[in-house]
Amino acid sequence: MRFELLRQRVDRAERRAEGCVDRAADERAALGEAWRRAWSPARIVVAGLLSGFLVGRSEPLSKVGGSRWLQMLGTVSSMLASLRAAAASEDAGDSADVAAQQASVAAEAASEGAVSGGPDPFGSAAAARRDGIPGTATEAPVRAPAPAEAATEVSER
Image (cartoon, rainbow, N blue to C red; front, top):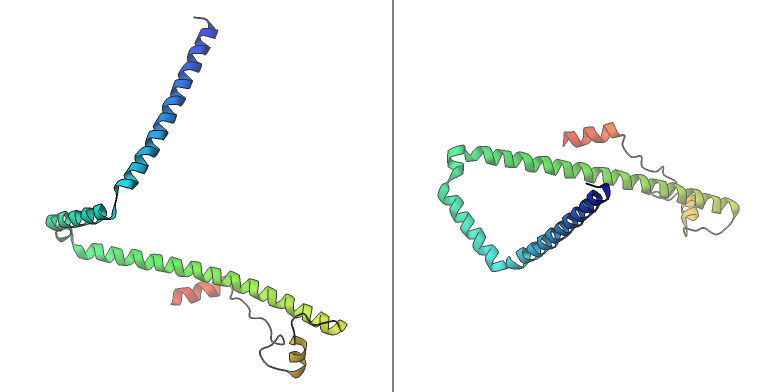
């Protein structure tokens, strides 16, 4: 056979394969849409009742040991809770770092404004420092715990 004839056959086969893939994707999308439309709330309730009845009739947990399943479920839920707590702690640490940086920038800007005699961008912060009012910019910013401290604190809870 000639090379040109083989190349034409390959091109035709590739076009047919692409057409089949496109048709399969369209049919899959149509099936997914029909599946989602078919599951009405009433059908979901009926399917749940039927499956619960069948599982209750077969009683698989009584033969295997239901306490093992419950113990595993409790372990998994506590693991997920600790992972969520760790993520929340990390997010809080990041936001605390950002807040500390913003506070130090604000304190520097306020002190520069007071030194230069310009207007105070934060209202009466300079006046509060002069009067010695506690809880103002005169206090040092709160330091975020080191990673080892945070890990120890989380593990002790």
